[in-house]
Amino acid sequence: MTRHPLTAARFGAVVAAALLVAVIASLSGLAWGSSGWGGVELVSALFGGALDEGQRVILMEARLPRVLFGLLVGAALSVAGAVFQAILRNPLADPYILGVSGGAALGGTLVMAFGATATLLGGLSVAGASFAGALGAVALILLVGTWAPGGRAGTYVLLLTGVVFNAFAGSVITFIRTILAPQKAHELLFYLVGSLSVEATPGATTALVAVAVVVSIGGAMWYARDLNVLSLGDEEAAALGVDVDRTRRNVVVFASLGVAVAVAYTGLVGFVGLVVPHGVRLLLGPDHRLLLPVSALGGGAFLVLADLVARASFGVFSTALPVGVLTAFVGAPIFVLFLRFSLRETQDF
Amino acid sequence: MVALLAVFACERPRAEAASGGPKRIVSLAPSVTETLFALGAGDRVVGVTRFCDHPPEVAARRKVGGLTDVDVEIVLSLKPDLVVGVQSATAAPLQRTLQSAGIRFEFVDVETLSDVAGSFQRLGTLVEAPEEARALAEALASRQISGAPDAPKVLLLFGRDPWIGAGPGTFADEMIRSAGGRNALGALDTQYPTLDAERLSTVEPDLVIDTSFGDAPAEVPGGAPVVRLDPALIRPGPRLVQAMDVFRQSIAEVAAK
Image (cartoon, rainbow over all chains, first blue to last red):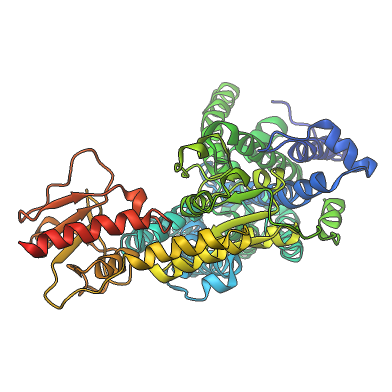
């Protein structure tokens, strides 16, 4: 692939194109849904201000919250995926690899299973616990990471402890599910599969999630140039004046903030953080200054569209599929396809 | 993005409250659906869950999802003036949405038999059928008796592979006791204990009530008589009366031996 230098004009054109894709995806997400009602005229009525009460309720209470969360969660996961793939120098790294999935699921599960107050506080306390669990796990893994001397061993230690922690958390969750009442266990199963059933989330909460995701993406983009250098190798990056440990730690914290907030409200949505950054890299090359913003917009669009299909599947299954099922279902084949493209391009693989 | 957020945060007007009894009811639980039909409000039920299968007319009603996965958009698109479900940990988010959409809702408690009788009365009031509601509640109350200290030990099974029984504090536990029996698992401290074959063989029940899904009756070690019961009958709805009759009759037969 020919690599163009990143000029302001190219950056602007590519990001504008990605933004257009995200806007089209969002409008489609608003226009169609499980009731099969709406379509293009709904969107035009929205902008013409001619919505009747029934239309307004479906749009505002059912579709808009899902589209907003789809954009935010898709963006956070894709950026985190791109970042983790870079700093761990592992193309299989996904946003959950550093213990985030295990920590979040464990936190949420504990509250759902044993928190007597969970019922009173609704989704919020479960979300709070998953958020705390996710960040707690990342903190633990970064702490273990400090045992390793700098250099290549550092990334291995992070990767290995992350994987082991997720496996450990998985076994604790299985244990809790075994001792729970069947009805509770069923609710838990539903919680653990990623889904955009966030319709009841208050606007203020959505705004806070948006702030966290923007901070997370902004923080990662701040280090975009250092990430470019880091992907050459720790020694090379250090030789070029990058404080490797500090950069790695800060980037992990920023990316994990977005993932933790996403996982707290929507559970584990797989493959977005793998497929989107790899796809963008194939299209635009590995420069993180472009990769990160385009992944954010593309990831948002991808998740909104996946959720649209999940909602539209209601007519077939009498239930909207959890979007996590769908992203894995389409994500895995796409990933293999990308692999084929990239193998064809780099014969020296 | 910012514009979308702004739209989302806008204040929305509340819908007018319905008057003269609800005309379009969405039911979010099989037991509630059965109760609404028993109260004579079935023709006003426009949406049910995919698990609602009784009475047969519900097959023609629009499905709004399952128990933990109700589809908000489908519910809203049915334009209901009353949404009824049972209390559960997963009900709170839906209640928030219904509230801000200005739709009247009621989530009844069905933890105990008296809760169920209360839910008949509450739903009867809501659909303006108080007489029918009283009759349902009285039918249920009339089936309840108390057991003697040496009453037959009843093991109620929810599932097999693995065996899952009814422990204390469950709805089934109360049903056994209200039908003149003793819960064979009443001394455990788990509500839904999973029993391996060894543990099951130490229970030594006088009667097994098998509500697990399966074609053949469960083969429980020990040789106690096994009574099959359609699991749908122990839903906290009006058909509990039939289930209580089966409980009482089989317990009385065992006690007479």
